[in-house]
Length: 64
Image (cartoon, rainbow, N blue to C red; front, side):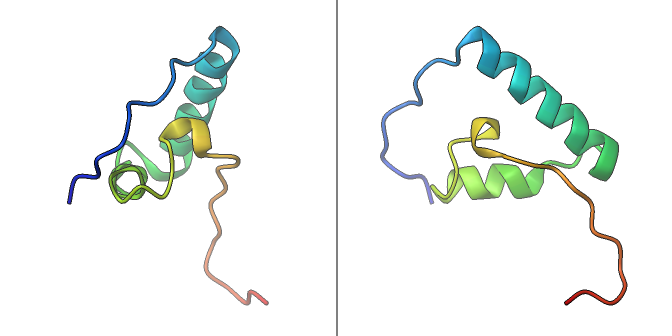
């Protein structure tokens, strides 16, 4: 389902650097498959890569 929302504001130069860094971290942790990010964006839950704060792979094990 496509949401009717205005386009996001343009990224600043600093934001472009941060987005590139976060995307590189994602690729290092999860490979090229960024379908989850795309689905969150399409659902209106995030504004794209600018909304990602931290990329961290959690390995299986005991998590509390």
